[in-house]
Length: 139
Image (cartoon, rainbow, N blue to C red; front, side, top):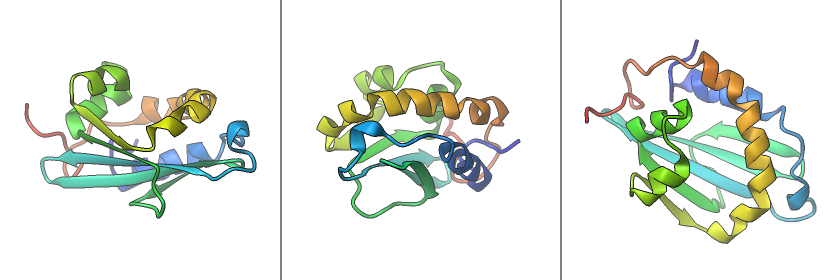
């Protein structure tokens, strides 16, 4: 079981993302890249998800040509991952910041829903963070 936000957890996401079929709404168009920046007590964890007509790919770190950047703290990210809050609730309360080309999100609605299904096994097998950059800050 990989700890939340660990390198092994990001690798698990990458493996799961490969199961996502191509994003029809992006066929023939430019890919959409979403960067996640999650700050913890000991630093920041960054990973990116690239969506295109061939599917989705997750990599540790930032990619070039990022369309959206999502920033939050590790506690909020864990609450979203565990289903204790939604990204919409976190955004409305100011705990999740979104910047970039937000107008591109509607093209991903179906893909994001499928990605949630693909990541279900990763969520189920994820352990609580114990140390390192992804360890949630005390609140």
